[in-house]
Image 1: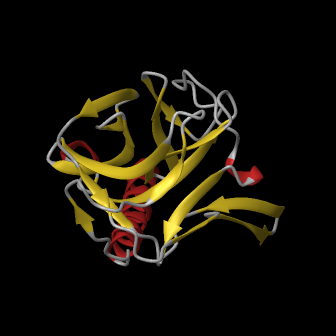
Image 2: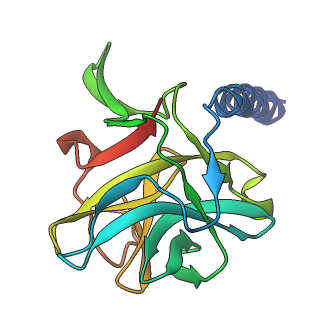
Length: 193
C-alpha cells in the first residue's frame, strides 16, 4: 500500500512538473525566421573562420536551432552533429544574450539554478522524441577554440554541434565527448527579447 501511495505521489509530482514545463514553454517570444539571403543574428565567430549565424533545421518532426557555418546548418541531436543545407536563419530583431542562471537561497544554502527565461526567443520544436517541447536559443563557449557557438537550450542545458559531435553544457555528463565550461561561470547564454 505504501508503495502504491509513493508511486501516486511521484506521478502527481511529475504531472505538476510537466504542467510547469508546458506553461514556461508557451511563454517564449516568437522569432522571425527566413531563408537566405537574410540578415541573421550573428552569434559568434568560429576560430577566426567567420561569423556563426543562428539557424534552424527540420528534424524528428520539429525544428532545431544551431549554427550556420560554411553554408549549412549544424545542430545537435542525439549527441551527434547533424548537418543540412535546408534551413532558416533567425532575423535580427533587437535581441540580446543573457545568462540563464542565478543564485537561489535554499534551506541548504545558495544553489545555482538554471532555467529558460520567459522572454527567451522561441528556437523551435524539439520534435517527436522530446514530446514537442519548445526550444530556446543559446550560446556555449568552447574553450578548446576560444569561440561562442549557437545551439538549442533544452532541459536546462545548452546543446551545440561542435567538432563533429553533440556537446552538452554540463561538463560532467557521462555522454559528453567534449567539455564546455559550467553554466555558473557565465559561459552559456540564452537569446531573449
